[in-house]
Image 1 (cartoon, helix red, strand yellow):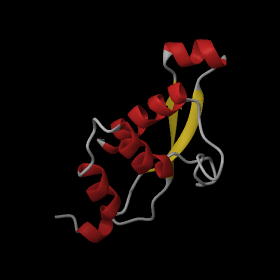
Image 2: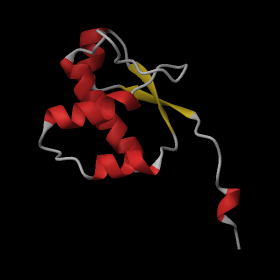
Image 3: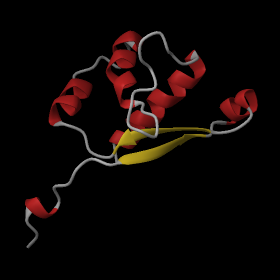
Length: 99
């Protein structure tokens, strides 16, 4: 029998690719960002309690999960993403969390 302690590990960055046809056509290539493969339970709890019909709430919850290759949030300060890219990134993050 495996022990839970054998599964405990530091979170690692995982690459996520946005390769939707519309995004590739508009931006000339697929787009890459990163997420951590493990998240604190508080993040899962926050995400589980979201109203998925409230786009602003979804945006605020997921924006800190969209990271660059150094683990820093892509959306910070005055930096934001085009709405089509943000929407695709949110979908990819939520798909990734479900795995």
